[in-house]
Image (cartoon, rainbow, N blue to C red):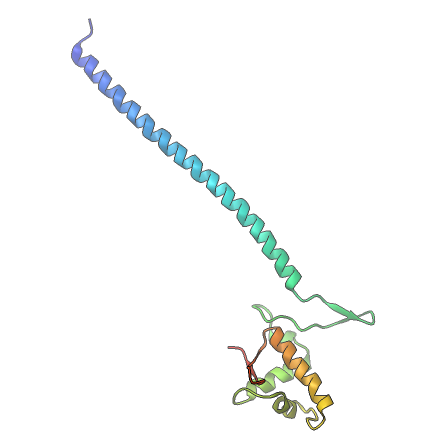
Length: 151
């Protein structure tokens, strides 16, 4: 016959091992669940990255053509795009707005860049360029119609 003390010890150890097995199985299930969640998160991240890349590509200014020749479009202001990428007349306009003591009207910019401000037909193309610089993020248009640089 088996020694009752040894039988009691083996039974106790078996119970400890059964409890340990339960804990390990529970941890394994948690690890597998988290791994599955990570796989889903990676797929979502890949999809969103692709969508963002497509959106950025479609939002980027496309080079235009006039009479079969490439024309330079005004790029959006973003990191990595320098003021030097603007055509020279736009650079002069931007410089005139920057040199002003505060927000300026199109007429004041015209005086600085040499536009005949007495003729409305000559001032409107300048106003159009100012608006284009606002649309691309280079300038701000205040509610009263004056223009100022972005911070």
